Structures are given as structure tokens and as C-alpha cells.
Amino acid sequence: MPVSKKPIANRKRKRHMLPSCRSCSTHTRCLLHEASKQQIWKMFTTGIPLQEKDGIFPRHKAPFITFVLGGPGSGKGTQCAKIVETFGFNHLSAGDLLRKEIASNSEYGSMILDTIKEGKIVPSEVTVKLLRREMELSDNHKFLIDGFPRSEENRRAFEEIMEAEPDVVLFFDCPEEEMVKRVLNRNQGRVDDNIDTIKKRLKVFEALNIPVIDHYAKRGKLHKINAVGSEDEIFEQVRPIFAAYQHEAK
Ligand SMILES: Nc1ncnc2c1ncn2[C@@H]1O[C@H](COP(=O)(O)OP(=O)(O)OP(=O)(O)O)[C@@H](O)[C@H]1O
Ligand SMILES: Nc1ccn([C@@H]2O[C@H](COP(=O)(O)O)[C@@H](O)[C@H]2O)c(=O)n1
Ligand SMILES: [Mg+2]
Image (cartoon, rainbow, N blue to C red):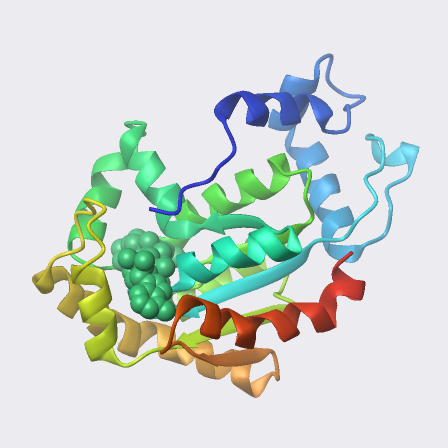
């Protein structure tokens, strides 16, 4: 399972690397300070560096956001690992963040587990909150958001809460037969890697995720990748997309 490679200790350290807040006495409390968080996000989304009067010290880079879409087993996580290695993005898998919530016995844990077992979509506020927390803690401004948005509701929630849109959207296009084969061979102990849940996930993908893909195609942001072939062959379709943006995303 492509889980975040960042050890917890590093995450804690990053909190202390965040700008300090004039309204709070410590860096940790600063994270909980809503106004400060909004200021950081405003700066992220507008790209306009904050002034001292904004209450926190400035960070300098606007986020570069890539959404990574595709059906179950289409190879999103596999290709994200290669993009991270080659282009230095921070990989945020929505599914992995949700699974971590289950593992940490959070208040949403049992609801998330039931939803994943059914192949359905977790309420957007929950998923966006998890993504937002990771983005705020990151000292890398280049984000690969894998498996999100899964529905128009996910997409709108992200736009509203984060006040941000993706720069690039990747869609790994894979025939159903191949996706089923890959998921059944994945062998990572996922509760949703069984034929019944896969069938449900494929239906949800068609009904809820294809409209999101169409949305970004209409806006000229979609890069459709043929997800059949070896991992390296597929990455050779991905590479030029990020090579073209490398200057912008720096
Ligand atoms: N090009 C490929 N050819 C064959 N198998 C592949 C290929 N890419 C990935 N796989 C394998 O297919 C399985 C699914 O890949 P991966 O986990 O990357 O898919 P995913 O799109 O992230 O799926 P999910 O949405 O279920 O998380 C893994 O076991 C992976 O090793
Ligand atoms: N935006 C999302 C992403 C995922 N889920 C749930 O998690 C399951 C696994 O996701 P993967 O990306 O790891 O395949 C997925 O089937 C959903 O149940 C979600 O609700 N919202
Ligand atoms: Mg995945």
C-alpha cells in the first residue's frame, strides 16, 4: 500500500517549521489558530506573500496542485510513487489518509470503515479536512492528490474549503477487466480488495467520478493516460506532463 513515507516524528518537526503566530504563544497553538490558518491558506492560494501585519511570517510559494484520478487498480498510487521520485512532489492519497483515520480510532473511524467496505464515498468535509491538514503541515508546495475528487461533491467541497483549483489533472484510463485483475492480485490486505466491493467501486467510479473527469476535460486541465502497459511505459506518458510544468511548479 502506498502510504506516506514521512515518519510521524518528521511531521511533528514540521509543525515547528510553520510560521509563528503573533496571537499565540507557541508554534503548536498557532496551528490551531483559525485566523492564522486562513492567512496561510490565503497566501497559498493567491500566491501573494503575507505581510507582518497579517499576523504571521510569510511563506513564499503558492501551491502547485495535481489531482490524480482513475478507477480502482488503474495504477494511481504506483505512478504517484514515480512522480514523487522524479519530480519531488508530496503525495497525498485520500484513501491512505482515510485508512489512517480508521487505524487511529478517530471519531470517524467506524463510519469510514463501513463506507470503504461498501465502496462508497466518505462525506467530503471529512476527506477535505484530512487533505487540508496535510497540506498545511507540508513544507513542500507541490502536491499530488491521489484518488480525489471522487465525486462532484468532493470537487466542490475542495474548491469551497480550500479556495483552490488544481493546476493539472491526470486520468489513468484502464479497462475494467484489467483493473479487476490488478486489484485482486494486489495482496495488501485491503478490506475493499474483494470481488464484491470491486464491483461496487466500479459502479461508483462510473456514476460519480466520470463527471469530475468530464468537468476537467472541459476546462482543458485533463491529461488522459493510457494505463495499460508496463509501469515504466505508463510513466513515459506522465513524465512530459510534469517536465512541461517543471519551471512553473518550482
Ligand atoms: N502498469 C501496471 N501493470 C500491472 N500491474 C500494475 C501496473 N501498475 C500498477 N500495478 C499493480 O496493480 C495494483 C493496483 O495498483 P495501484 O495500487 O497503484 O492502483 P490504484 O489506482 O492506486 O488503486 P486504488 O484506487 O484501489 O488505490 C498494484 O498491485 C500494482 O502493483
Ligand atoms: N476521495 C475519496 C477517496 C477514497 N475514498 C474511499 O476510500 C476507498 C479507497 O480509496 P483508494 O483511493 O485508496 O482506492 C474508496 O473506495 C472510498 O470508499 C473516499 O470515500 N473518498
Ligand atoms: Mg491507490
